[in-house]
Amino acid sequence: MNIWYLLTLAGEPMLWLLITGLLPLCYISLIRKKIPKEKRRQIKKTITVLVFSVWIASGMVLFIKTAWYTKRPCTPCSISPVCNPLCQGNSSFPSGHASIAFAVFTSLYLGFRDKKMSLLIFLIPSLIALSRYFLGLHYLVDIFAGGILGIAVSLVVFGVYEKKFGY
Image (cartoon, rainbow, N blue to C red; front, side, top):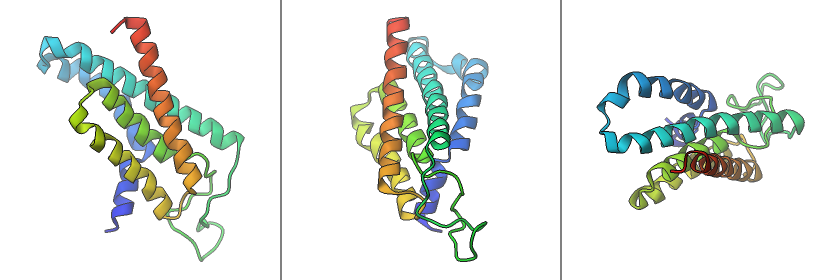
């Protein structure tokens, strides 16, 4: 199996919308009871930032793709028999996979601040974003813009959370 295809699956926006939709319910019903009291605040903050970052970034990507159509570098199979089966007919700019991947991993970094994991935390979304380019589904500017959008949304959500709740 192609490594770039597996990486692109890891950044699937619908997967992350589902995960972040279920994560608060899992936290409230299952996880919270098992987390030591001194860690609960950090976990709650990280989950909140993660959920809002993913949903806001997804909404912004959808809005930009709808308002500003950009042709993809590939040909969808609905148009031509010589096509890329992964190619969708929607707008290329910005990359939703890159945006979501960077929103997820930036939220995790901000929530846990583990310096040892910081390289890995930014290597994974970079590889997910590059997978979109190497599969011929996006231009480099698409994945760069998506990555910047995901990081920016997470930083803003994190800042608002800290300002509102003071920690």
